Image (cartoon, rainbow, N blue to C red; front, top):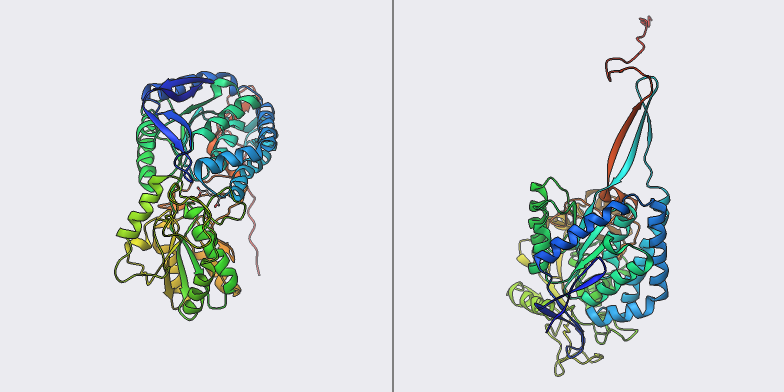
Length: 515
Ligand code: UN1
């Protein structure tokens, strides 16, 4: 048997190293079969992209952005079926799936007008009859590897600005969402992106992803974008570093939420449950450590446990579901491993049922087919200390820790201690505490009286430390990721004017103030 392994210049290539795309809410529902693209296919995609660049880089930016406007219209027209497919393929609740698609629409609208700017500067020269300018130039072949948790929004964060800026793209989407990714590519072609400007290689990170990244060493790739684990991000960083490239790395998180004694605890409960269990905890920005002032710990814990029972888990196509299945069996297994290996005897799982949801062990209001889906109970681990492995290990599932602090210094210390630095939050009505937290937190993103998740499409998104290399996605600053500056100097004096030497600086006459 064979199946699609890549889309190179619009043509589907067939491979034999197969993998299925399975609905995680019903493992008997296979959306499609795909195949892992080989290194040779990745190479061909890069070569084709480079050919496509010749015309694309010369296409006026407003025309390129006009194609993105078409893309936005096509997404808007198809928003509901796209959301339905997204939910069926990766399991996030339909309301969130619509949000994922909407984030792509928002990103399009943000960057469409950038095609009419992409401003450079006119800069004064220190010499006569000489003009200085700067221009933004595209980089070339942009190879990008994305994760399955935001299968439409996050690729759009990368590709929309990359294309508007005049780059050509080779995409290795998550092996958990190949079907939606194929639609994404076909919609880009339908919008008017030339076939040789956008290419897709399907497959796992270990096979196709590694093959694609290795082509940086062959000089076939000019920029890498990667959303995924810190471990893989470091490997990619090394390969790019030795080729003098700076990748865009959006890695894991162990996001802290600090709760001050004066906080509105009902607001905290909603924010913590959403940050911890929304998307079944599978966001880079999901809550990792709930850091609570010791004076309110008992009250807050009780409120959390009261509310947790009302969370509806189940079929993600139901409108009021809080969270659905894990993205795939692999993610459920990892979550179960974490429960087994990271939760130690001195910890206390304060949730009564933990681990896999089955037909026999399920929440009262569960609404799916438990045995056919990869569902997990929400877990809260209490008595965690900042020295425990679970404190600084990204868990990427419906689980978060609770630890207590005595004063703000200690809270900030804990909030910065995991080594990650993606998102963070503080709940307080004390302006001084909020200000100190905002200035001293090392994370790239911070929320005041809001959840750790839910960034908007026009603010810089990204992290520091183990969460990334300081690169950012979203917003106008991304243009710096996808262009390089060219400085131009144009001398119209008709003579050779030497910078720093043939200048006409004016010397002052002496002047001394006397009292
Ligand atoms: C991610 O988890 O990789 O801020 C992206 C958020 C979303 C994006 C998350 N808008 O939670």
